Image (tube, rainbow, N blue to C red; front, side):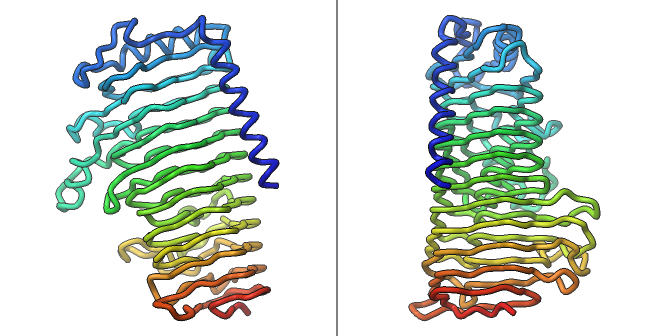
Length: 393
């Protein structure tokens, strides 16, 4: 399965570069269109001009950002377009304003909407979020902040070799999309930067995230309601809060999460490893057919955790039983060290027990001793060598 998935992504990347090759005659260099690479003059309008030309073309087209630093106040790229192969090729750096008020009235810094056939290749996007993080840490009244890259209602997306740094909030968000492939993505935000999820996926299907390095102040990858057929492989996570399904159960009526695979990944010094989290309130949400395999934990506080009483900061907690159903979750070949005594923690709903959980070939230690496991309302089986010993009912 992994080999087939890798082959599929390789062929997708070949298609990406093939489309780019076709687009050489229709390349719009933003400097040729008037953009200045001084990091001070706003190039948003130039990017809009380039996008209008690319979107109106019936042939594959490239928008080229050459080397240099380009200041972007904010920009939305909207479809549908006349072609299905637009590439944003970045050799330089796009930077947001360091003034926290500039993006105070928008949720997104760079936004793509209603497109079929989008590639984002290379380069750096710098959200300049440090000032906003400092404001939030101080307890002052601050803007919520903007997500750096938001992709909505878009099909057939390739993101390759992109670096996102210092995002005000979430770095990369995929919402309502189909057939998305990310490879070689790098995310870097401070370990204490608030709400700076590396990659967030929701209401999307057939998404692949490969060979990426993510360090941030929140989840390295977060998986929201309505996500299906998500494949995550060869991720290096840390600092951060791990790879999380959820939080789920925010709403009484909510789409579920199913068919999620996380394999061959490493967590270093993170708050969590592989996590499923839901609010303690009524909901028809669910998470099912989830597979975690070949995972290395290095000094992780909660290597394996299901938390159905999720309530960050322990303020205004609903305090009810979670309606979210968690089932058919497999943990296989997970090894390494826990930073806390309890390395496996299944805290499931008293009205919807976690069912059909599977532990196979687990070895997690704490201070050179076998760690411990804790289970509440968790049912399943264990096989192979499982350390700590399974507590599943």
